[in-house]
Length: 210
Image (tube, rainbow, N blue to C red; front, side, top):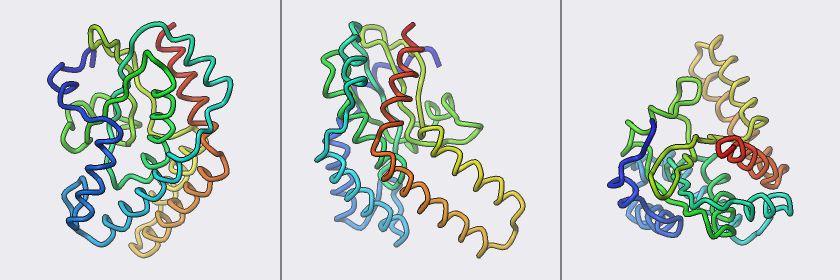
């Protein structure tokens, strides 16, 4: 995808508006997916807590700050996400901190399931994995590239789990594998303290703009 339609960008929401949307839907017993299942509501509740916790911390490294200060071209970071996504709850607060630090970055957010045409242009190994951060030139809406859904070491957990799932037919065993993977991912994020999100986003950004 070479450009994002201006109408999409005009209707995209800010990070604060995204959080408000999640909270409002949750209070009504719903989620950004429209589902009202206990599982989806549970994930959404966990994610609101995770985002709130990360919002209170500023872990941007000096390397990240220097790299962000070097950006001279006004950019839009368009995030594809959903409120129930565990990775998004870990990644978006950091991406927001990075965008806030730079005068030349504006973070905008759209929901994946409402924009599958855009999502399908930025698949990860054929999957609609989120969050996906699409980097655009603000003046032209030209797409430079995208990063996501998670740092490479976290991705290894998901890939290893999918490999095991490919050899598992028992539904209870499959559920147990996914439950294990979700726990391991959250452990990884907690131990990493946002370092690899910053490093890989900056590395991807520098490559896009080179």
